[in-house]
Image (tube, rainbow, N blue to C red; front, side):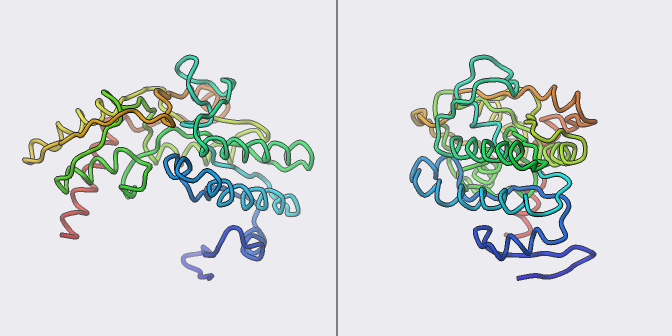
Amino acid sequence: MERESKGFRYLSGDCSDMSVLEEGLRDADEVIDLAYSTVPKTSFDDPVQDILNNLPSSVMLLNRATFHAIRKMVVVSSGGTVYGVAQHLPIPEEHPTNPISPYGITKLAVEKYALMYHHLRGLPVAIVRPGNAYGERQMPSTGQGFIATAIASILSDRTILQFGEHGTVRDYIHVDDVAQGIIAVLDQGRAGSCYNIGSGVGKSNSDVLDSLRSLAEPSGLSVRIELQRARGFDVPANVLDASKLRAETTWKAMIPFEQGLERTWRWFTDTYRSNA
């Protein structure tokens, strides 16, 4: 399905459909590949389907892009999963990549295919590895996005599941900063390179819930937590070193965590009230 609005052409379809890919690439000079149909938990539940749902269509897009006059292509990978268990923090792009989830393995495979097409066919593609994006409009309870799920649970008076005594440590970065990082790589990044997009600050699930508690309790809301055993496919700690992106482009993270969290909380509370 195709429609136009305010100078933009919207094309809706299955990214594994060759005709959809060709129509999307027609007259395009820049491409940002954000398509992915799984998250770490669903990939663990069905690793074969994780491969089938993501790898063929991603490789098909890369392959077809080599037949078009693309100025720059950015493949959005995963800074939270491709490295696996960190040898040291924060993690630079040169850190070994040993993912411990099917999701991270397929993300890394897409990266390798992208670099192959760059080296063999000259595809001007760069890779970004974002940390844990959060912010307004994030969908809760999808298996990805702890902050959105936690806020929605608080507002609905539901228990928040936390895996491990303090949960995992993650590099939470506001979606606006992630988007600006992707644009910076699209405009200024080097083809054939990988770039982390992160804040360089790690926060555990407990840290996040403590911050949310200070926003919830003044409104008479409570933060109820149910502790469960740590999950084997969750990397214990992930914090990204984004100094390469800062050095090679004009990008830098602009939204401090507490400010971004308050914005996200305010959006969710306004939305939930308007839908009540």
